[in-house]
Length: 121
Image 1 (cartoon, rainbow, N blue to C red):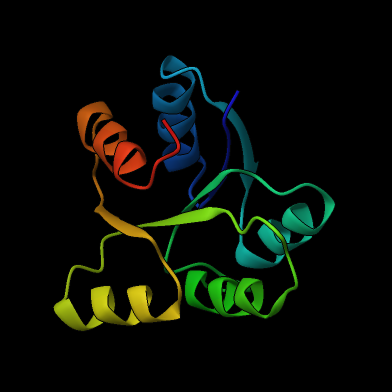
Image 2: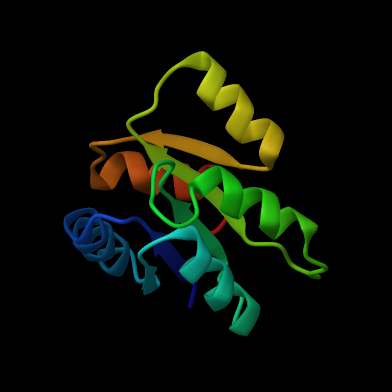
């Protein structure tokens, strides 16, 4: 079963994402910020990370930069999930190591297609 770590400071977004992902038979864990997500990744790597951009403690970009520094055999796929839709943000995310990008609000079809693009479903 595919494992997804949903990283967002919004409990509502985490709940919506969980509902969608579980309907796709994906096991979900949650983190409320990048630091929490990094700790969880060090303990057990997910297959994919659904990552918010703007969060307290550690932003999505900071998380992605730290994740890239770690020595891991199978780096998880990373899908940035954010309201930041400028071309500059998208380019920065991809350059930092994001595999895909999805805009909030998202629906099941959009999220499912992004997961297919990165090859986790």
